[in-house]
Length: 368
Image 1 (spheres, rainbow, N blue to C red):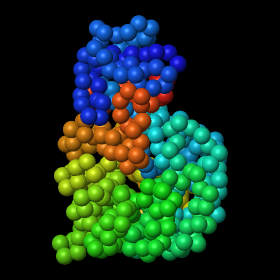
Image 2: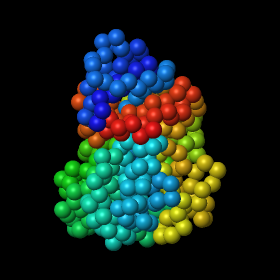
Image 3: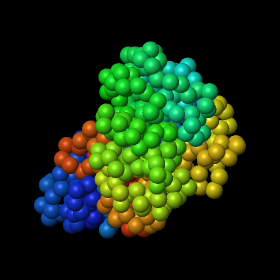
Image 4: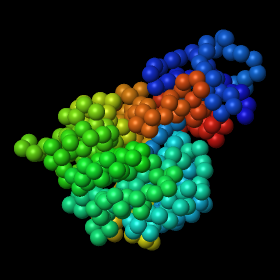
């Protein structure tokens, strides 16, 4: 890999905004940031001509890309196409998600993914089957099951690739939750009809985050504030949110951001057009739905989510970037992605002031 110096841009490091400096890359890693007049020798210059530079984006919940829905394809080739498609959209790290399905499909998806190795692929996120059928959304009710130690062991024993799981906190007993926590997954409360007390109790027991705020969860009502209220009022509970303007109104995103600050981060919940299997996604005007009209997934990239945050929600650009980099990386306990610190992986996007992607750099290599 060539030594590369990005010059002529505004650098969003995750903690500060820097101008008239050069970002140095070598051997797929970030070396540091120096004054442009202090550039060391041997670096190939990439002049970004007044555009913006930030870390590659991290999406903890998506199901596919292009025409590939992983749960319907279940092949290494589909994972490879998805990875490459996402990188070209600026998402350089992602969690491949499977919505509630048969245990057989879950196991097959796990088996295949265990043989897949790609630096963008963070692992699998199982959104189910341990949910609340009352808030199932597009998930088939007959495949939602109660979590037990036996079922968890059957699904996860020997697991090396499942890294995240969405569960309904009110549907899991304390001892089963404690057992599930031994698998060291990133647990997320979602598809839940929890009361405020049930939700708060789950966060107190160590569930760190929540799945697609407002969607498929007990709403905030002035006499029972539900899971939304538990998330807002808990000092440690984080939550993902879909900023496509369809799953959640931009005004609701604005309210949530004001309440949660750094605890709110972005996902896409992106799916792909699909005509086979359980989830047959049909593209509507800006989102996907099942044939019966139930909203079933998003049709945006994470970078488009940043654009929506800035243009429609009024979130400052540097904070919108953190919602797609810093905050998900913190949940993953990863210090080598989602930032531009020395030693971090050189995953970088370059974009214009009107929020159009210009370049994507993956592990120090210029993709375009």
